[in-house]
Image (cartoon, rainbow, N blue to C red; front, top):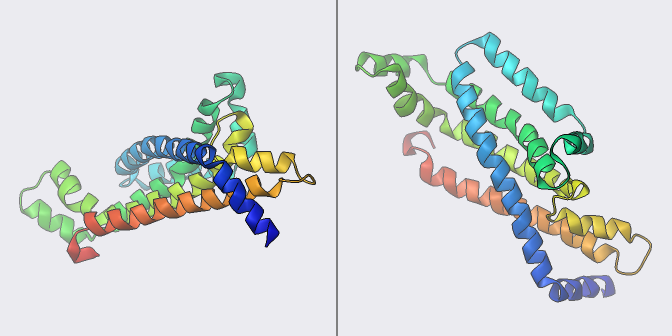
Length: 218
């Protein structure tokens, strides 16, 4: 119990720091996700009808996600310097695949008969995309966004190693003190609050899905 009590005291003593780092972590994730969603959905719309192009786009983004995270973070330091910028670029690259894959899958999964019916009603290709295909594909696309966000929230903890801040600062502080008194409290705090942040994002997406998905396809 003493370890748990020590952790509670640590939380109480460092409330402002934990809150600041949690907000910093959340902002980093949100910035990356906004950019990744915009590019991935647009790219998915452009390539989903052409199998060769969609395979190329998916293969490239698949390569990104296989690169070790620390290597990808440090790769951009000579180009953009240390701090948030290399972390944002690396996280952006990691975020692309789930969204792009689900956008292509969702759009290609729309029943051709539905699209033909819309075409028969005189809808243009743009109208069919915006009023028929995207709404029907939205639950699948949102699932990709949700997966990507959870992935990025976890990987962003490593961003501390390139000076990007966030909850990874607490994890790094704990590792740097391993074997010394007070080492585990910041470590636990960083890990637990990263998980809680991910769960918060996940809950937000569940609510978003509930209110943005047409009732007929929930």
